[in-house]
Structure formats: structure tokens, C-alpha cells
Image (tube, rainbow, N blue to C red; front, side, top):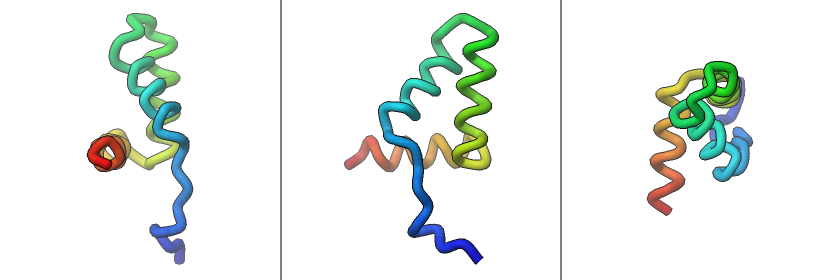
Length: 58
């Protein structure tokens, strides 16, 4: 069983770059790449959003 406290996430700046790619790039290929990177790293966009919101509070 995985211990979620030991899960390693990408650096916050990389996550923000993927969000930018997905939301603001205007390029469908970049949008898909950003979405895919977030899902691969977090399992879902919702979990990525939760993590990003939590990290930005700090």
C-alpha cells in the first residue's frame, strides 16, 4: 500500500506551466499535453487543482 505522505509531486512551477499550457496557450496540442501531464502526475485534474490550491496558500 502506498503512503500518500511520501508521494513526490513535480515542482510547483512545472505544475503552473502545465496549467498555463492547458488553459491559455491557445494551441490544441499544448493544451492536450498540459492536461495529460497533470493527469499522469495526479491521477485527475481535480486532484491536481486541489494540490495547486493548497500549495499556493503556503
